Image (cartoon, rainbow, N blue to C red):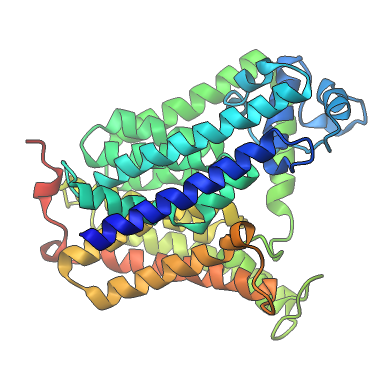
Length: 422
C-alpha cells in the first residue's frame, strides 16, 4: 500500500511540474502554442460568423487577422462545429496576447481538472466505494502515463475526451444508461472515431443508452445545421473525409493502419521491411475489419451477462477497438487507452492472473514511454520510428489482452458486488 501511495505522490509531483511549465509557456511570448491553435481559431471564426473550414477559397478570416496580430502561425481545424462550442468561451477573454495566453491557461487548468475527475471515476471501476489505495493506483496509472503529460503540453482536447469516456463507461456500468449514452456521444462528437461506441450498446441491448447516444449525436447535428447552415457543415464533412483518406503511415499514427503501412510501404521518414504498398493497403483495411468483427463477436456472445461490470468491460473493449482499428490514431489519442488499461488490469487482478497482468503493464509502458520524449527530451541514439512502432505494438497488445479479459467465461468475471450500491 505504501509503495502505491508513494508512486501516486511521485506522479502527482511530475504532472504538477508539467502543468506549471506549460502554464509558464502559455504566458511566454516565445512559447509554442501547438494544437490548441486549431480549435481556438476555429471557434473564433464561428463567433465571428465565418467559416472555419475555409470552403475552398483564399479569403482571409477574422482568425487569420487575429493570428497575425498575435504573431502566431494560424492552424486549420478538424473539429466538428459542436466540438468547437467547447472553445467558444475562451475566445471571449480578449484579442490581445494576454487574452490568448489566458485562454491557454484556462484550457490547461481544465485539462488537469479533467484528469482528476477521470481518476475518481475510473477508480469506481474497481469498487463502488474505492479505497484510498485504489484511487492512488488509478492516479498513478493516469498521471504517470506519457500521453497525459503530452496532452497538457500541446493543449489537446483528449483529456476532456477521456473524461467523457470515463463518465460514459462508469454510468453504463452503474445502471445509468441515459447519462452514459449521452456522455459517450459527446466523446464521438469530439473525436469521431468514438462514434463506434454505439455498437456495443446495441449488441448488449442497452437500448436506453443507445437511444440517448443517438439523440445527442443527431440533435447536435441538426442544431449545427440549423444554427450554422448546411454549407458550413458540408465543408466540415469534406475536410474530415479528406483527412481520413490521407495516407496513415506517418510517424504520428499508432493504429494498425500506421503499423502496417510503415512495415510494408516506403515513406519519407522510413524504409519498410518489404515495399509492397498495394498489399499494405489491403492488409491494413482487412485488419481493421477483423478487429471490429472480433469485438462484435465477443460482445454478442456476452450479451446475456447482465452484471453491470460486463457492460463497462464491453465499452472498454470497444474503446480499444476504436483506437486500434481507426485509420488514424495519433499519439495523443492514446490517453483514451487508459479506460481499457484500468479495466483489464482490474479484471486480471481479480482473477489473480498476474503473468497476464504483467503483459498488460508492459503494453501500458510501451504506449506511454515514447510520449515521454516531449517531457524529458529525446532518447539519444534511438530513432523515432522505433518509438512509433513500439507505441503501435503496445496498443495492439492492449487490444488483444482486452479481448482475452472480456471474453472470459462468466465464472471468471469480476465480482458483481463491486458494482452494487450499498
